[in-house]
Length: 204
Length: 263
Image (cartoon, rainbow over all chains, first blue to last red):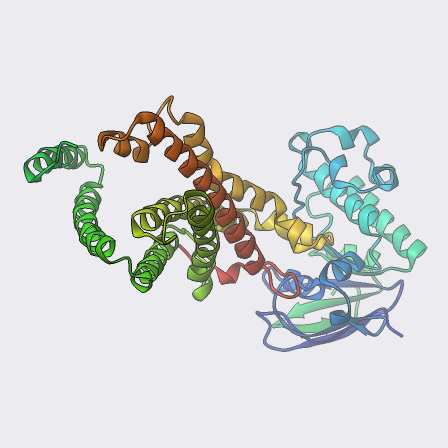
């Protein structure tokens, strides 16, 4: 039984529908030119835009979940993090469970004002927030390391790998960096003209 | 009361003309709007003067009801016209008009039945000016509140969606923006309550004093009206902003900015 099954999904700019499955503990890498619809595909899976198609978790249709329940279970980390309270800590339900150490962040960062944090710190905190608040069973990562240096990129990759290993979560990782996708995912696909093309050979 | 006739109005009108000329010379680009607004004031007030004169002579409940609905319809249109990004379809008109109907009519009827209690309760001398003042002020609150709501949702859609992505429901995700919108909707009436009598002498009270009523009597009426207006504005603004915020999300709690017109 697959963890997440995507059936005939068609985000608004796609001409054709997409179907694929994600097993528990599996990671899929997605790449493609800017504007090909990678982000729209992830938004459609968490149900942020109107679209055709069905998504099932453990074979249970999405409509059987309330919208908030679905989005807590299938968590999307968008490329730009957003904050609406003064400090980072105020955004966390249980600050003590946030994997700050693994992301190279000091606990004192939770008390700092959001405006004082660098974009890289905010980006890492956003992942910590998503994991700590919701413990999603499926993790959709939209360019999670786009603005990070090599060390922090490595920290994120390691944290996601550990999370996947410990919880059996499924991962869909979107990136422009094919070498990264080969490190972090079991299968890689390229989105082209609204279709998924499997990337067979490494470095293609 | 010393009557004011065409000559006196002409002198006051000359001041408006001067304003218009200054605006033109300073290239403020509002001389046309000033002219149209001034002409509208004259035409609308003369017309309502005639309507009220006929109405006061008859005390016909159906006629009073129709006039009230007409006032509501026009207030609804004004609310719509002041929206920068208004809701598409009937919603844009319907939400503002429904909330003004619920708040202004309820408060007016309550005041007429329980507080002022003229006989019959819909006596037009009381009913029409009271409803007019309530509608006029509620209209300001509703249009400010809705405008702030739709503008806020547009500008901060990233935050709203980020909150949805973290599993908050629509109510929490737009909660901040909704609170700010209600606040800005009722701020004008709070200001005028706070400034009443110190900074400004409210128009209705001034009118009654000019007409020869005792100041104490006029003040009591003004306090009553202020309280009614603040209750009506708060009710109307809360209703409109709540309905508007609900309409920004669909049954799957997706933020639907496509339901707003582009400005």
